[in-house]
Image 1 (cartoon, one colour):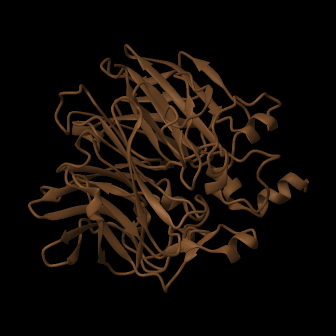
Image 2: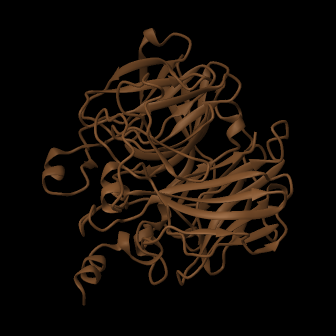
Amino acid sequence: MSQQGAEASMNWFRQGLFAPVTEEVTALDLPVTGRIPSKLNGCYLRNGPNFMRGIEDSKHHWFLGSGMVHGVRLRDGRAEWYRNRWVRSNAVAEALGEKWREGPIHDHDFAANTHILAHAGRILATVEGGALPYEISDELNTIGPYDFAGTLPAGFAAHTKTDVQKGEVHAIAYSYRQDHVQHIIIDKTGRVSHITEIAVRDKPIMHDFALTEKYVVLYDLPVTFSLDAAKAGRFPYVWNPAHEARVGLLSREDSSRGTRWFPVEPCFVFHTLNAYDDGDRVCVDVCRYAGRYDVSLMTGPGPITLDRWTIDPVSGKVTLRSLSDRFFQEFPRVDDRVISRPHRYGYTTAFKQLQDNVVAPATVTGQLPPGCGHTSGNVLLKHDLQSGAVEEHRFEHGAAGEAVFAPVSLSAGEDEGYVMAFAHDLDGGRTDLVILAAQDFAGEPVARIHLPVRVPLGFHGSWIADS
């Protein structure tokens, strides 16, 4: 076995559906089964880690892979192009034999690998942990690291929340180099308008957060920085049973009041579906990992459930209610236009074969490697949180990534639109961009756009409509 093959066999983040691609591709006029809705004009972009030899080694964690953005351009019922491009950090540019597009670095430089944000006329690839986002062009070429026109003094975040009515982008930024996290507001012009520093102990991961009309909701949970793990070359965040699990409310109107914290049962949360105010109370819908969670192996002892925390500032208590009897759901999404306000519909990925058995995704044998439950599933779920109904769209011999909602127009209703996701054949040979009608979710896709290359499993995507 070659050295490269031996290294890959030691690390399942480089195998199967996770296996990286080695070439950047541009393909025009993609073949389509079905018909692309003519009202879908824009780009579907998805970010994710893509191992690059010369930067990452055999011990690398999936979360640390160099970012690669995959995109499909739709216009007038056609799939005009598919492109994939590495985010060219200094190290990536050097590995490709290119000159780095110089720009600001506040903490450390990293090829942002987690999400895509479009705001104030710019497209940004984002990541957490102290690095800046990278700006990319509408054809996915790297423009350079971006600090919001010099107004961001430190790192940014992977997940942001956009209040579409106010035109604001909110983020929670953390770094193991700091003893606080920052709540950052980007105004409609694309500049930082306000930063609030929030003291926390033990340097926890804050991968995501929630936003309501009144509050920023923070998750201070028992996965915290470990210097010992970092020195040992392992992923540097571990389960810390001594760290109290709590959620916090920070007033959007007056952040000088400070954050009010509320204890919750020990758990971990990667992703928020949405949150909203219900009178004096705050409802927060999340995918919750019950009990101890190992980020380095991406496994835990219990299920991943879609739950609602109801925070009552009057009583000082948080109540927990399950929103679904389905286990191992992740990558929750809503129509982005309703973020911070009451929502009726939500979408998640799930494993159909795990619904009746409480077992970790790592026990799935043969077709999918450990940890896939965090990034894909063989069924997409549509939740009607008003009626409690759940619809399924199954992929009999495949895995689907995160479902992204695209409205038919800016004024359309919450359920008037389409759901997009990359669908991966389990044999690893083909990837399609699947478009589902939101109001016929379980039916046949309205279109399957056949990509010329395999797309590895990745993280988060966005539909960026033409203005």
